Amino acid sequence: MNFKPGLEGVPVTHSSICDIDGLNGKLTYRGYPIEELAAHSTFLETTYLLIWGELPSPQKLRDFEAEVQMHRRVSFRVRDMMKCFPATGHPMDALQSSAASLGLFYSRRAIDNPQYVYDAVVRLIAKIPTMVAAFQLIRKGQDPIQPRDDLAYSANFLYMLTEREQDPLAARIFDRCLILHAEHSLNASTFSARVTASTLTDPYAVIASAVGTLAGPLHGGANEDVIAMLEEIGVPGRASEYLDQAIDKKRKVMGFGHREYRVKDPRASILQELAEELFARFGKDEMYDVATAFEKEAQDRLGPKGIFPNVDFYSGLVYRKLGIPRDLFTPVFAISRVAGWLAHWREQLGANRIFRPSQIYTGEKVREWLPLEDRDAMENV
Ligand code: ACO
Image (cartoon, rainbow, N blue to C red; front, side, top):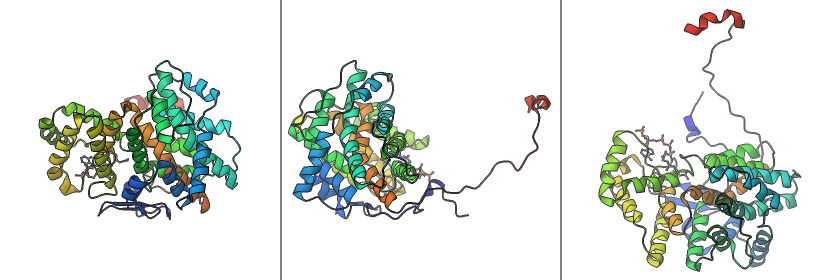
């Protein structure tokens, strides 16, 4: 059998959503280069493009934005449920549970009905940010802030989270971050979403399973660890020593490396520019110099192995400057990636076959049953 650990290089589906050219550092959504989308689009327009395959007409975009705005609020029952979550729990776990709970509130599983699909897309895009912001306030002992209809998608999220209206530049930079994180082909969480979708379960279960997969430190969770690493390094002059130690001890450097890219992740380059734009306006984060010194040192030592900064390396610095707490970096990633997950959910349903891979069994051959009273001799084994 042709076994590939981690399914490296093994196609598991046809897809027309996103294309990665890992040798040249190019990324497109539905054929549009990520640089163009990050410069000119909005997160909701990009979401529409990803899910329905084409850029919306002005009217279709207005309708989609209005629908999303209308569905931002979450039921008081969801908020009450979140109040029972432990305040010390990780916000990704809170998000996974609350996303799954939406399946209880919208339980009609009519996944072959286009209106049901549209409504589920709108609800998930609209409510995930509200739930992330709600848990942040609830764990501080406060009541969640209601969405504000006069604020656009990203500005409203930052308002609900930080309890103040942000500068328009900050809101626009955040919106561009959401565009950059919205989709990335068959990464672990998207694969997880497609596997779950292939059973024909409801979209809330699809998103909840993807959120759980994104949470791990080898995937979306790396952006938290990058900031921890930069803080541990502390000053630019210590970057080289830290890197040497990591390489000596065969420790993975967080925010570096990618299964698909052999050059710097194009999203990392754009995020670095966004960080610089933000710092030029609101003052520099002292960790930025540590990050750039680290990237320079890593060029010679990890570069020859094709290991360069990935999307998680600079995103945390942007989020930190926007006042987003470190353990919300991955939930913010999820707010964005829900667009890609939903695009893959639709695509999977369009040509579905349940995922059921095989395995190479390495366990015991058939054994004879041993009654409990005869197992004393096993104590010493
Ligand atoms: N630091 C140091 N060495 C690394 C790194 C890294 N970040 N990434 C890969 N390598 C090395 C491995 O040690 C291995 O070396 P070896 O062949 O000498 O044993 C080789 O590169 C291949 O590494 P794998 O782990 O097999 O590569 P894989 O494609 O399976 O993993 C992954 C990709 C998980 C992203 C990996 O690069 C990693 O763990 N990076 C750090 C975590 C991280 O930043 N994750 C976020 C990725 S982006 C995202 O998910 C949104």
